Image (tube, rainbow, N blue to C red; front, top):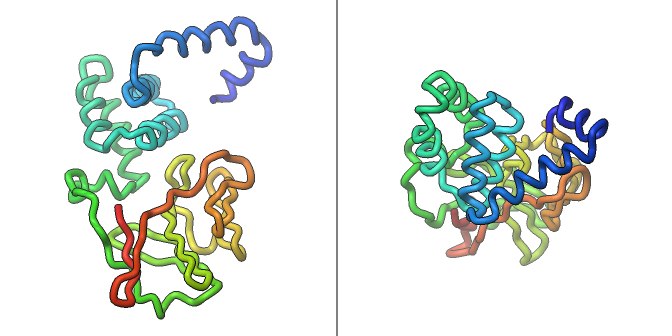
Length: 208
């Protein structure tokens, strides 16, 4: 929430509590994805960038596709107007989410070649480019875990320099993750995105 909303919640908890309860109850008959898409539009309407990023991330996490997000923005044109749609699109472009790139919008999930297994040091975490995104790959003996480098909070691309041992800290809002488990251990409450993987002919493949 914004500082202003936090202030109102603190100073007028009963009134604001009733307001948030109303918002929650008003969406009882909507599925989660639709409710999230509506929330995205409301944040664009008031041009609140943190809120837009928050609900965009939530909509994607709850099953909305990039094409559905774009359609929702365009369908709201009569209310938003072109200037606000362009404002939101500029933020999307700056976020550089791989799934929103034009060449990926209609792509079907597939297996992607990541690296030779022999190039992944045992007991270490590798940071690898793969098909326009970055991955953190943890290897411990026969155990392999493949994580998206994007923070689950606002899809910030976490750089390799943010890794300290097995501790990974997003530089944007300081969510901390344990790369052995993928769990968020500080600030936030959502784990790193894990990609399904397999090893074939000595090469690591990941699915997205």
